[in-house]
Amino acid sequence: MANPEQTDHPPIDIQAAGDRIEALLTASASGGAVARERAEELVRIVADLYGSGIERILDILHEMGRLDDDVLAALAGDNTVSSLLLVHGLHPYDITTRVEKALESVRPYLGSHGGDVELLDISDEGVVRLRLLGSCDGCPSSSVTLTLAVEGAVEAAAPEVTSIEVETKDDSAAAKGSLISIDSLMSRITEPEPVHGAAWETVAELAELASGSVANVEVAGTPVVACRVGTDLFAFRDQCPECMKGMTGATIARRLGGSANDAVLTCPRCHGHYDVRKAGASLDDEKLHLQPLPLLTTGGVVSVAVPTSVTA
Image (cartoon, rainbow, N blue to C red; front, side, top):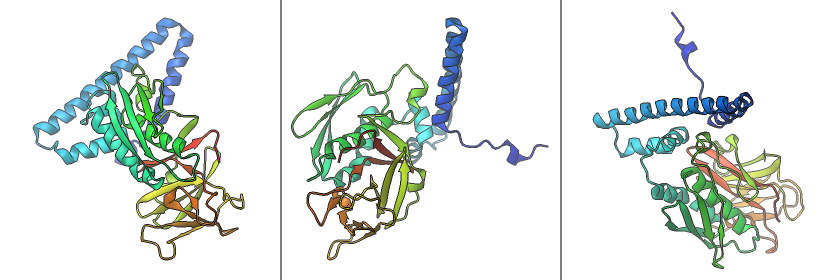
């Protein structure tokens, strides 16, 4: 008799699986157009088969009275399950609800920059119109970093969106191109695509960072200093703008006389002080600030967007 432990399967890496399927489909093209078509048909048939199975599971749960709001929320909150439900058109939440939830997930980050976002409209063609509200005083990169966070959240929650238009306070709208191909199976269950010259990178070690703690990590070759204040995570480029050195060994504490939500990050070398909740604005020199980076936490998975070219 087989050992039960030997029959357990390790968790599937959705990103790696998607990349591997795409690589195999591409390789099959070397056998000609017919080979490519047969490989794509095989993927579609397998996907349809599993889609039917997932739909039947939901039907059984519903028939047994177990598919209540809590269960639906748990399914929708799991990255892997949610992605599969989206692929097969079985997600319990419509596009408007998913976009609203995505925006809600980034509002703590936007608030730390003195900003917010408003959903204006979602067209029948899948065009999402947003308005970016507020800005971070003294932070020239604020508009870019806030837009990165918003667009990344929307892409992950609603991959059927065809484009995003973000209006800022100057009423200028930047229309985005197609985000994720509806015709491509695996592109709908992978990580968010790069936007504005930046890529979202998963940083597993930040998920368990304790409140009041600081971590220095490297994300896609970029040094990052991150900290947690209560339940909120913040990430900045790991470079003190005063001494231009890395901030390994930085400490975080409440500002003297400040509220419980205040958090000041202190450089271990020059002792420069930076307000975490105000996008890293310096408390010593109003012209200085840390470089904030967009950070998202979805289903317990922490991702940081690192621009390919970081502006000061």
